[in-house]
Image (cartoon, rainbow, N blue to C red; front, side):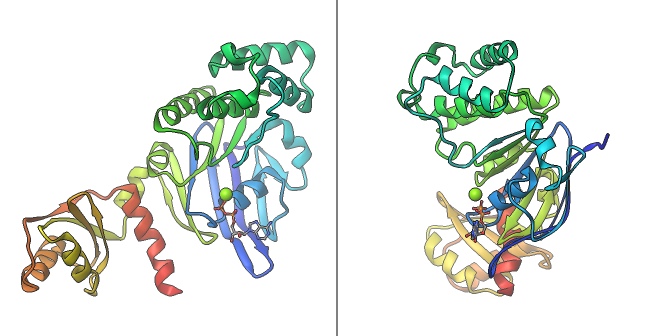
Length: 312
Ligand SMILES: Nc1ncnc2c1ncn2[C@@H]1O[C@H](COP(=O)(O)OP(=O)(O)O)[C@@H](O)[C@H]1O
Ligand SMILES: [Mg+2]
């Protein structure tokens, strides 16, 4: 049995002129949470749909749980769960009826179906809602119901496409605790997100932009390998300082976070904080202090996607 849950080589998908996914290579080990981090239109959903066997690639090879995809997609169907970006439930049915319906799609036998619904209701704290209609529950509860539905048949691999987009931070936290419980039991999870704090929780992630894989690794590795230095600046004139710095050839970008400016400086600057403070002083603008900062995943993301913007 292969140790990799997902292995994709040179995966491509074109929609006419649009290159939605370009030469994507993935090696995702089992029992891990792997993230796709990327803005809208970066190819996350397209990649997930190809890996599930729902969309035929333009070219490339896919192996998922030992099956060659899309040829053996039917055999894979019962081993994977897929929570779509805009998951839908039947609003007129109760929570229990929704779960029963899904169990029937997965052709679970009666006894197993009852057992799994009971277990999922308990695990995802849905027991007291079972008789309520899906239209009557809150966003966070709906999210838990969607996760219960996607895992009802106890899949080995779970695809979650922006599962928490409309959920508040507390419910997002509860949701992620549930994901780690699943991983603890051996489930592999591929989750797409545009939230940095979610990307931070993944064991490893791929940063996607315009269909291209721009960087890959664990959050710590990605921070380590960032191709830029980060300098924070405190000033009484943050807007003017930011605009001035952005004109400099060795400054990639500057963004304001509260009172501080977060400045991305070219990696070839030996003393980036000195280069920045010298430039501010030279321009006659206010400088309170200027320090080197530890890169965050957002910095990694900006640095990784910058090269592509520059080459357009
Ligand atoms: N069925 C389709 N037909 C044509 N273009 C599509 C289709 N699906 C996605 N695209 C295009 O492919 C690109 C990637 O889309 P998508 O995979 O949905 O990105 P993401 O999920 O990261 O937002 C976008 O430019 C999108 O417009
Ligand atoms: Mg999408």
